[in-house]
Length: 133
Ligand code: HEC
Image (cartoon, rainbow, N blue to C red; front, side):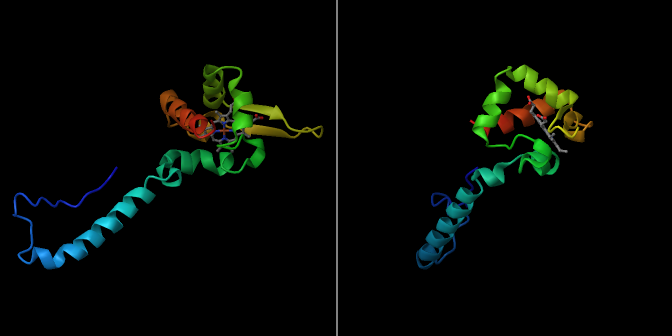
């Protein structure tokens, strides 16, 4: 969202009397405002909060064998079986052997967020997939 200060030169109601002397300052404020608006649009800051708190701890760095969000190859492999199947695994959770010593990877059902609806999980998965294409 682009935020703009409420300046409306037409109405005059919110204009300071010494408007011209403030123009430079106003321009500066607009610039800074613009910068802030830009930086708030970077992907890092548009992450869904639930993703950050509940999925990123594993999917941000591949902890425990989780496919890292943004790893195109890894997600292409997962998506090969169809998006619905990927949703289902995220909702139901699953476990898979990771090595010969009997260790497994664990994707907890709904990322251990049983309070989330299936649709909320699907949109989180959509987010992860979008970041990985
Ligand atoms: C405790 C760590 C952990 C958390 C938290 C976690 N995941 Fe996972 N997730 C995994 C692991 C590990 C795998 C891969 C398991 C494997 O392939 O063997 C995985 C796999 C997946 C997959 C891929 C399914 C497929 O088709 O292969 C999706 C989608 C997914 N997680 C979604 C989520 C979402 C959404 C959240 C947050 C609500 C979440 N995960 C939270 C560990 C986690």
